[in-house]
Image (cartoon, rainbow, N blue to C red; front, side, top):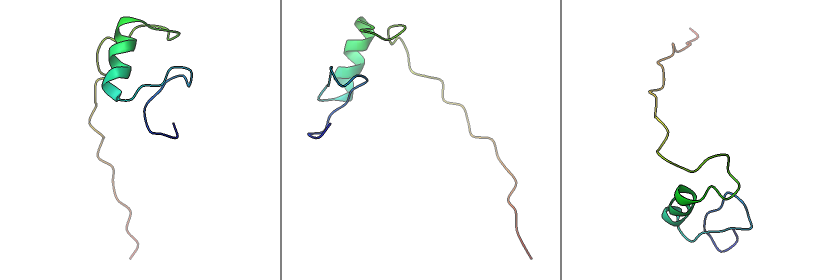
Length: 53
């Protein structure tokens, strides 16, 4: 948004992320499902580093 804010669909902007979550937790409003819980955060796997010598 030009004035700041959050949206999933431009037709329904919210001033805060908390407002967006509260709305879509009660009413899916076009989403496939209501928001119910946060996504599980997985740890990033360690990768080897490449060095040139």
